[in-house]
Image 1 (cartoon, helix red, strand yellow):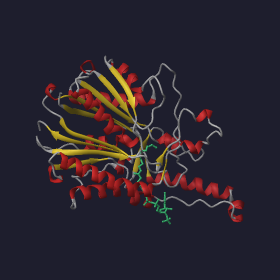
Image 2 (cartoon, helix red, strand yellow):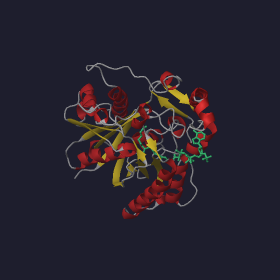
Image 3 (tube, helix red, strand yellow):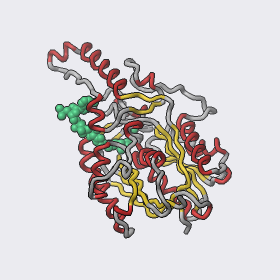
Image 4 (cartoon, rainbow, N blue to C red):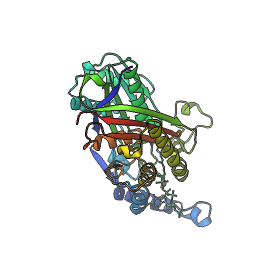
Length: 373
Ligand code: CO8
């Protein structure tokens, strides 16, 4: 059995970001157009007029101020309202591999490692651009890594569940060094014409380099890992390979992300806090031993509620950092991006906890301990 460490992390963000005001202006222009087009049916009471969205609501309900997207022009084009992606040839790199590769290279560079020192690549994300060949194998090939690569997916817990798989590979001796890559290209799965959810997600890619502890001095030792899943339909996407064969054929809307946001909020927060508190107790730790929580970034009020339950007191932003304002919800990448952006200021021996939660339902929680300062 070998101890595993997170040696380094890397990030990719698309060059363009969309503010709440820009998103809302486009949505509201479309609503006006839709209501005018359906004025007769609305007047006759057979259709309900659509309500406008508001930046104030979005920021208050979610903490989101902007989100990155792979195509701002497409998202803000009232006749399109979804990102445009040029179809790439089979010999060109895929969109997900391209994004993941930038994050992976940044993680390697941060650790001063060469791809030849890595044994495997795990690509863990909410949705894969294609079924096969694996995106992970494409990234492995682009980096010239020998060994193995595979894809996996657990919605918003993809990052932490992927990390747990990488750590398992190190602990069992299957690999000495694994790159976990989480490219979350979420905006194509988002219905930008749905008032309840059009603001929620953004695109990003993050990577962690996970190695044997003894292969370096620095990084974060992985002290404990927990996973929990409970079946729920409250966050759902019916997009899948059977869509083209289904009778009746699903409409475009059926293929998007949908959720019962309020129910998710009420059911997931206690599940997460309970798992974290039990995990700490089982490891003879208290919340006072945690310098920082790197929580999944779905909603600021959810994060506040979970952190308050775990700390059992008011806490500072430094203890539970929020990246939602800049990134929005980046699905499986959220807690890893929070870690990447806010892992400074730890002395050797100080601990923090990375936790994701979301569709499934799923919770993944990992206790980390800083090695050399
Ligand atoms: N503008 C203005 N008003 C609005 C808007 C809007 N855009 N939307 C809703 N309202 C109104 C409603 O009509 C309602 O009005 P009224 O009170 O008059 O009925 C009022 O605002 C309140 O509406 P809600 O109750 O829906 O608002 P909430 O306070 O619950 O906030 C949230 C909505 C932000 C969605 C919140 O419920 C939330 O964040 N819940 C948690 C959801 C969550 O964490 N989901 C995780 C999903 S991510 C995941 O698991 C991964 C899935 C894979 C990702 C795939 C990528 C696409």
